[in-house]
Length: 208
View 1 (cartoon, helix red, strand yellow):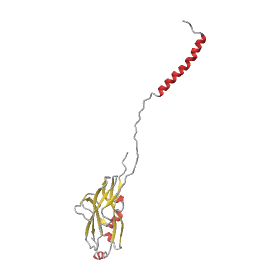
View 2 (cartoon, rainbow, N blue to C red; view 1 turned 180 degrees about the vertical axis):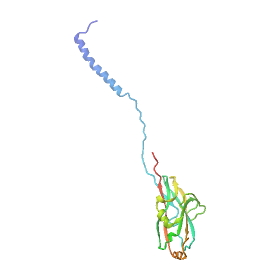
View 3 (cartoon, helix red, strand yellow; view 1 turned 135 degrees about the vertical axis):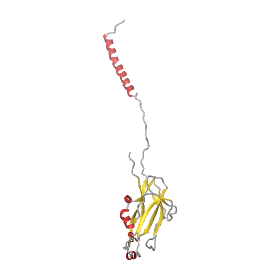
View 4 (tube, one colour; view 1 turned 60 degrees about the vertical axis):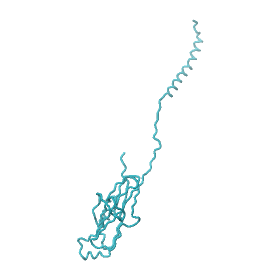
């Protein structure tokens, strides 16, 4: 076999270098495109607030409009309250805007508000109370201790389903116990008024 000349060996060595570089480049390119890939997606995330809505069936009428009171008289009225909310919450009853004459009739009208089932506005037929009512107290006391949501009573837990309803019954008594005849007579011609308020607040946000 004929041995290549020194010049031929030199040419062969130079020509091998580009081939080696090309092969190495192909190996790098193939290595960079041979990875496995996979993805997953949770698309369309959004946030929207819920709402609370509370109505009653009084049609704009006062629950109590009592005239010509006499000592010892009592009475009761009912009202149906409906929640049309999209979130759960709690309804509480309280008083506001107490006003009256200087005679002090508000100290002698006792009121208790109970929650239950059955009955409707101005009609307590079939009403059945559930536990949780505040004790009967004078209007003047209620105005001091039961005058906002934090101090409200007759609580009702709502589920956040439109159309939920419950009935409240208010029972009042003109109580003149312990008064002298002169003090009772001083209440003639007196008057007092108060607002009964039902407020719904959404439940606390769950943890997590």
